[in-house]
Image (cartoon, rainbow, N blue to C red):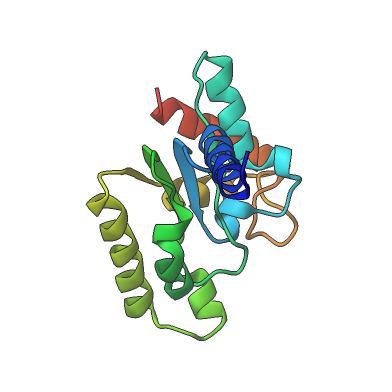
Length: 170
């Protein structure tokens, strides 16, 4: 086998491996700031719990958490296309401009415009959007659902949000 053939073989093998991994074919992508990523162990994040619930029902779904703690709406708008791989069927969106305001980067109108642009980009690809920010806020206001900071979900809060979203994905 020549060096050129060997290189071609390894490139093909790498492509096949990536396609078989969840990276190239995520079916559900969670996108947002710390409402998506959170501050609990990875296997306790609502995205991981959601995948477990859906798989227990017999679904072969793969949920990818593409959330970034501290992310602003402008930063998310810049990376939205690269964060959502081809093959994605649903994006669960949890972003509201809270980090924009906290970092004094953008006003409410600019943050809302960025969120609208993010949704527009996702819809243009024919991907279903579930805007889960309202659900997140309703869960976090319940006793025992928030971490001591009052802004991020506890382990129980993550479980509750995942259960609600699983009901929406029947």
